[in-house]
Each structure stands twice: as structure tokens, then as C-alpha cells.
Length: 157
Image (cartoon, rainbow, N blue to C red; front, side):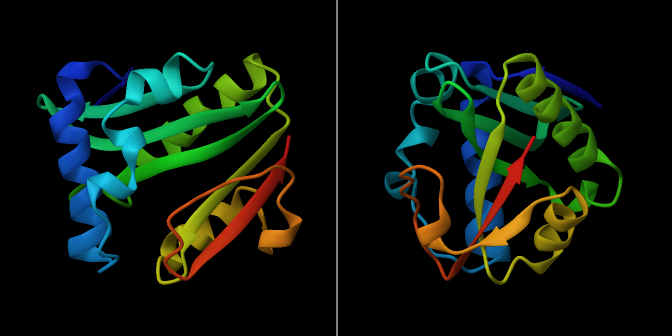
């Protein structure tokens, strides 16, 4: 397995993986149109100072993670997904470590994220990683997300 920065050649696999996990595994009923960043990863994440990584095994995308930079020192952890066949094999941990190293190297001090309330396994991961659950009115910056009974988390670095 290798983790590499996003390139457009991965676009269809990234969209397929994310929509499968959101809709088939978690029944969130989210479309690509509700997530315009998936159609424009380069413009939304990369050109604005963030990043997007993909985990690859046998030329297949098996995981993703991204930073949406929203201010000089703040960002949103986005699109953190791992194929169910690779969960528990430290793929998510490796993606997260790269994400955190990027934050440190780029002076990102505040990270928020949203996650569906039914995704309890991810909640456990975030809490172990030092994120705290917050309410919408505690967000440190304006942030729109497709709310599917979502929980919000914050981490100060």
C-alpha cells in the first residue's frame, strides 16, 4: 500500500469509494451534487492551500483523506474514508498521520470535522486522536456541510 497526493486519474475511483461508503454502508443518501468538492478536488482542496491524499493498493483507491483550508491556520478534515476490506489494517492511521504532518508543516492549528452520528467507529477514532465533540454554535469559523444528523469535532494542534 502507498499513500500519494491526489491526481485526476484517481477521480472516478475516489468518487466511487466515497459514495459507496456514504450510501451503501451508512445509508446517508448523499449525491455527488451535494458534495461539489468531489468534482473539483484540485480547485477546492489543492489550489486553496489544502491537500487530498489517496491510499492505493494494486492500482485501486482504498482510502482517502483531505484538508480543506479555510483560514491561514484553520482547516476541515474531509473525505476520510477507508474501504471496508482494509479497515483495521492501519490504512486510516497512516492516512491520518500524513494529514497531521501536513497540518504541522503548514501551521494549521485548528481542525474541525463533521461525521454522521451513525458512524460510531469513526467517532471512537477521532476521540482517541484528541478531537472533542462540539455543538454547531461552537464552530470557530463558518462551515457548511450536508447535515445527516452529523456530529462535529474540533482539535486544537
